[in-house]
Image (cartoon, rainbow, N blue to C red; front, top):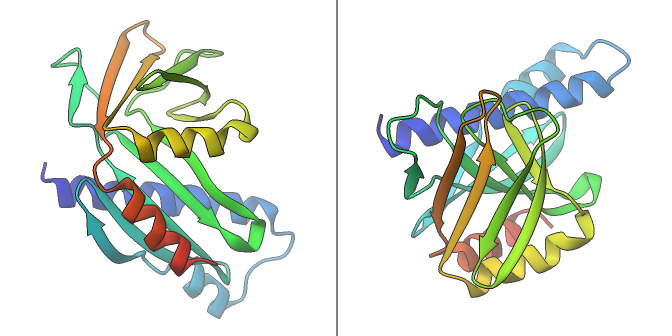
Amino acid sequence: MTNARTLGLAVALLLSATTLAGAQQQTKAPSQPQQQQQAKAPTPLQTFESWATYTYNNAGAKVCYTATQPTDKQPAGVNRDPVFMFITNRPKEGVKHEVSVIAGYPYKEGSKTTVKIGDATFSMYTKDQGAWVDNAAEETRFINAMKGGSTMVITGTSRRGTVTTDTYSLKGISAALKRIDGECQ
């Protein structure tokens, strides 16, 4: 599968997850124009080395994010859906630089993932195929480590007990964050 095609799949996954979350918060049925706004596909902004940036409208609220895929996945040959890392801004909700991962498999229930960037280590909690920074107060330190690092290694455990290690390039992350920050203020 090409990078553009798998990145397109990630965009669709993110859009559907965000739309679902928004739908769960609504108490009344959306009007026809609202439904059309919710279904609007993300708009690519720019690519910076390994990181692509996008924006979309979720129920009238602008959302911006940057996404990338691992440069290496271990063990090789394990059957997984596409794997992605996202950093998302949702200014209407006061969210800036929310870090998340789609692992391409359901995580072991109650498990944590470990993220290593240089000498810094972070923990992420898991649910289904997703992982998020365990302590939101750590997201700034996480982002700063990404900006100062060259690679990031994420280790997780699948529901079947398979331990996976995904390596991501951090080339272009600073420019990608600057782009989504400028787009979503």
